[in-house]
Image 1 (cartoon, rainbow, N blue to C red):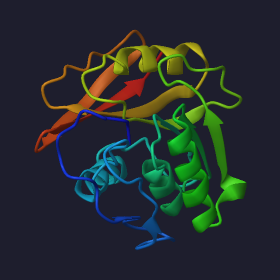
Image 2: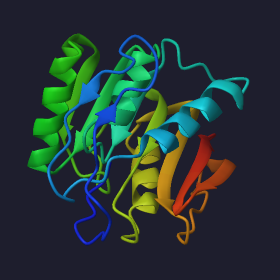
Image 3: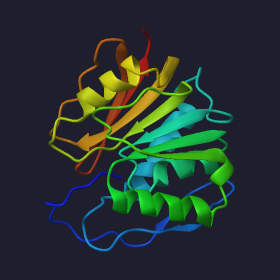
Length: 198
């Protein structure tokens, strides 16, 4: 969901929650290219991997954090599929407004925390999470500092999973305390899944 103001593709069309309690619910997206929502195809692939590829992970009842949240679609998809609570982090005022609107549209205010925060310089977490989504702007070197911040600032439980979206040409390295479990490409998009095991 990250900002990519220089990305020369078409503006996103309708964005919907794919599965779960809010399946088919439309989400607000910004005009133009100020925010790049993760496509339905890639979101579906992420959640299929989370549901079937990792025996010791369960989304049902999980706490999640959506870093560089954009529209909030990843965190809201997780809530729709049974996560208990989602924290949405973004520093773009337009994105914060979109997340507030989308959370209100599905009446998830009691299961969501929305914070104005820089994903590369994360604040201290109130509660550790089971799953983190990282979707920063491409080619800006933000995944490594975000992974470091998640670990250092107490955002992840031991054994938590992290999904990191990047351009296929970008390398994602398992920072200290992380192991790369899976990496797949979907067109020009790469999804890397890591495990936090300090």
